[in-house]
Length: 349
Image (tube, rainbow, N blue to C red):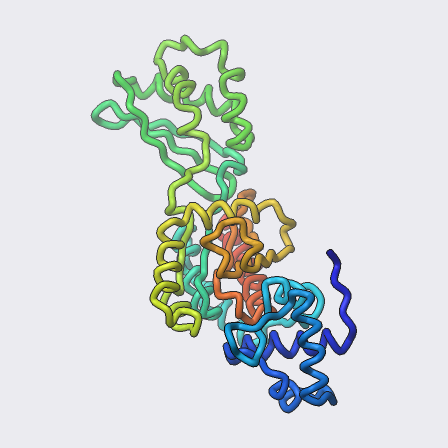
């Protein structure tokens, strides 16, 4: 249901959100009347607050005389009341200076981005590895290793290199292995991994009995070679010390909750995977109960995508619902832009 508020109601809701974000204390009518230049008496403010509470935008915590925003109230604030902000030139230069190092390894760059994001946001920062399943294959190399192991090396246009070890019952002469390698490259180079996975069988149906047995091995190992890695290491977390120092985490149970969230990062990974569907320039804000997982109902997530060549990853932050949304959105947006620039530069170099 679309909520329409009067200017007075909007102003008071804005004051409640901003003051609560700043102080972590419930906001009373006297505070608003004295602190904000609205020209309203405490009694008038109380009347408006009662209306906002009836609309489900604020509520009484326990027996406090003050109010705090509900998830619905935060959502209205983010969508309709929040003034967009930008990082200062000094802040941008500091971020760019920290991440614009001579790092070539993509994993090291992502780890650094996660640390910087946690440091400047004072929230729990997260960076997911790019989704290689959408990457284009540049070449495959096959290397015969001792103990009957065949090493498959995938070089992707995104700059990512993946290695997969396959058990192979016999040793193969290097000349024959190179012939099979060239044959495979001729048929699938230039395709996305997901396309290769879905069509490999048809593309090589005429070679399933090829003499070395490599094609048969590939046919039996398609999902292992050409699929996304789903292990928990696909997400980098940083800033745990920051978030547990916030007032919301004075309770040991809440600290335990954030620890469990990191340990069960498949939940976060699923949320981030859904965020990949949004437009490249868009920043997603998911508040409290809007999150589909109960473990995330006490938190807000702000996420944006970044590009590593033709592969997309997600970065963002998790924090209490009481956060400076305007500032956090600006930080996430700028970090996604800078990370894309740094990774693109590495690929072109």
